[in-house]
Image 1 (cartoon, rainbow, N blue to C red):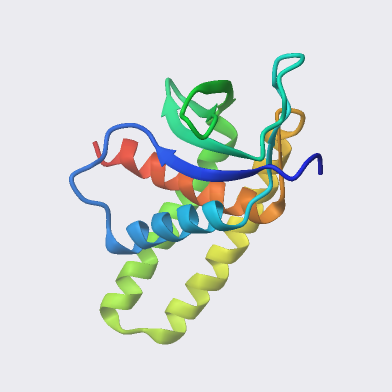
Image 2 (cartoon, rainbow, N blue to C red; image 1 turned 30 degrees about the vertical axis):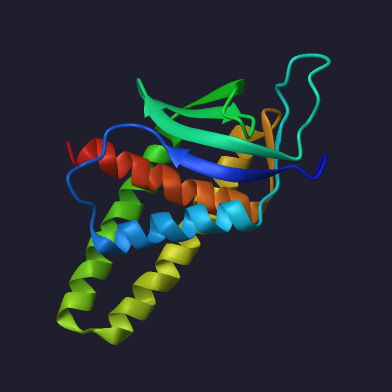
Length: 165
């Protein structure tokens, strides 16, 4: 991994639905807190001569079917932008939303064994999403596996916003 850069702040850009389920809001808050606490994040698409910073602010959004990583300095000045096609993520995002729906239903029904099974499936799905995130960002942004897992969570939540419209 190149450098010791990290994320100091993560902002989800775009329209918000009136209310996200509490479970999804908790996932979002935890992912953002974890990304700000411990991450490895190094933009590899900087202009020649542009220095690598110690920390970056990331504005993450979905625009025109693309996942956009709007990378800024800590004063919020734009540094670089990376866009990824959302298509490769869609099957995993769909599975994520199905698991979230199943989790909510299992909690409502008080089915502890079912909740544990769903959580195991969710962990596996996050691992798969993180692997895809690492592969898609290769050569664009250097991140570690845990950062990729948390970014995948936020991509799913951003997609939830689109679906809720």
